[in-house]
Image (cartoon, helix red, strand yellow):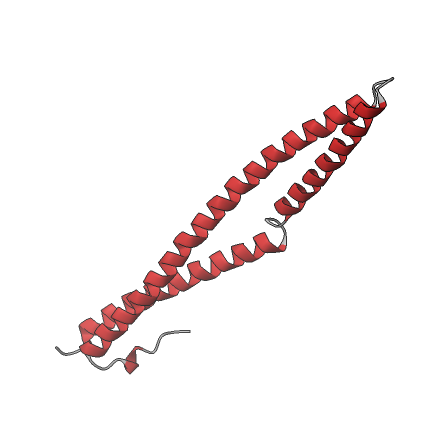
Length: 139
């Protein structure tokens, strides 16, 4: 849809429009920065969760191996079973936390980023059009 620049009949109106467009553009540029920061934080968190998952899996493997050892004393067996259950719980919690950053949530974050990029393009094009139109108006 083409912008109707005939609505701007004076240079002062163009100046007002340019000021408002710049303010709106500034808001979207801050939003773009915030989206980038959120993505970086999510990547760091995903890497942290992956490392923690690897550590928990090592614990699970260790306790499982201990329980598979013949003639493990009853007290040690009970302790290993308890620790194994807790390790499985931590693994489940970490897996759930990691999955929150995938699927629909990740898709919607991409949609949001695309909307911001489109809006920035629209605002930048509007600024250029108003600037060009302003030059054609009498001083």
